[in-house]
Length: 422
Image: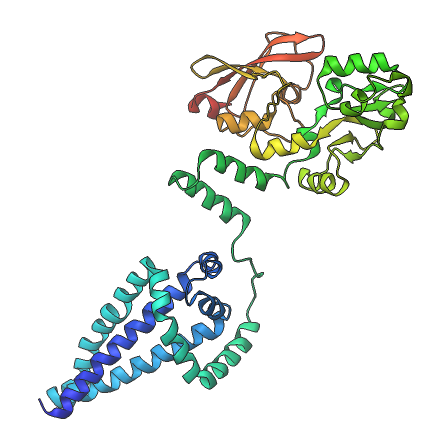
């Protein structure tokens, strides 16, 4: 071979490397996680901020890489053709270029670098960062021209709605993967999902129903109020006139106990704070903001007609995130008792959401909150003890009634074949 042919061969090898560089850079810079890049910026990793700025202009970035790659590949074809013509003559040189250069480019300048970059996007992206910035500076006029015309063409095509870098569903999926891989602990997994569910859960789903609300009649004496506080162990009480549909205030037990030494000065209506009312359909995410803004811990829940349905407390909202909170006055309430394989005795006041979470079920929560409500909706009437229904993969048997109120249920998890036949 002549010196000229050696130079052409060396140039061809260099162009191969440049083509591989552009191919790998394209894959790495389009595959790298932008959330990860932002995290690296916050950790002040060298080059992360420049990488974030580069990724902020994806059209220019892609145009620059593709222009560079095409220029390199065209140059490689020219050098290969002249080299093969010198070796094999004009008749066979062009054919040799097609048969030899094409598979070599495909394998060593496309498949291999892109495969490696796909597996190591962060490493390749930081290696390629500075050279790509230089290329984009050198090709800036051409990149601007290509980006302008490509923008004109894309505007003529149907456009999809611009989506966020990462959606809520993707974050949930990441949390699930994190738990499976041991990065996210089970408790953290549950709390993170609880935060996402705040916007989907309404006040009616977490409220204390009216039948369980302990209130104070406005005309009660101090001794009656004190006895009620000592008996109930609650910290806040609605004050009402006549019935709970006429709540006039909310009082804290601490304010009542302050008058133990001077009961004659006690005035329930003067001490009671203005009540805070919320519709039962309010998302608890919005309720949490209202609690914080008003510096309140208790709200009266009303239906569409203005009647009081129950109360909801800040603790009820927080428990949706962190789980059940037992304070020193709470008696531990066991809502689910195992009876045997796939069979459980369930307190009918247990929420449908709790049962779904505990047993990985998909019982409908539409228009019902508790398992008692679920059975009433499934049957369409008030059941008798011993009656049962099969729905959504479970069999529910009414085990105990208190007049018209369902107290306990036996829940049997049905095998897949029985569940499918329902």
